[in-house]
Amino acid sequence: MKLKHSPIRFDILTLFPEAFGDYFRQSILGKAQERNAIAIHIWNIRDYTTDKHRTADDVPYGGGAGMVMKAEPVLAALQDVLKKTARIPRADKKIILLSPAPKEFSQERAIRYANHRQIILICGRYEGIDERVTKFIDEKLSIGRYVLSGGELAAMVVVDAVSRMIPAVLGNATSLAEESYAPAQSGPTLEYPQYTRPAVLNVSGKKLRVPAILLSGDHKKIAEWRQKHTKTLK
Ligand code: ADE
Image (cartoon, rainbow, N blue to C red; front, side):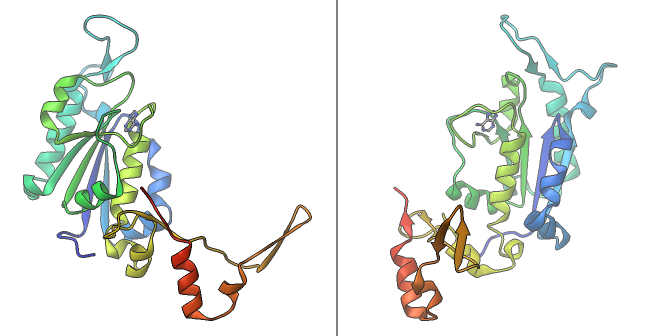
């Protein structure tokens, strides 16, 4: 797939910067950064607080349980990122607030995001975030119909799925085309079952065999088998 821009720059605004290090250093995303196919920048929202206690949350107006993320540090962080990346035109940026929201992440959305040069992900926390932040974002995005403790896991999901849309990240165009959920005329599909050695797996007194056709070396038959066992969603 040809994308308009590569590399993609991700900027993640969070109160928990330590949450990201390990995952982003691993395997595909780690290599993608080494190859400059993507760049990931993490910003600590607490660095943008101005009081002695570095307060990033406060009680909600109108009362109620829990704390609400204050708008000022989030917006100060966002403005700083925008200033530091002013060379990237606004039209090539996508500013996303991760929170429980009606808009849900999907493979189609990952493709759309991947056509931007910069993706700014704001991680909500606690019971919510001052609604006025939404005046400065392009969209609120959820990764599924469940409530997480914060947007950090969701941001990782978005970075991962969007990065996989860049051919240089996978380093192998075929694996993208064949991947489950790869965009296809027929809509998202699920990949066929895969096996690797050993051909016979002895486990708990059972012998689990790889389908014989996959061992046959008959590429035409293998392709037919895979086609037959590929599931289409919806
Ligand atoms: N924050 C809390 N729940 C979330 C979800 N489902 N998706 C994205 N961000 C969230």
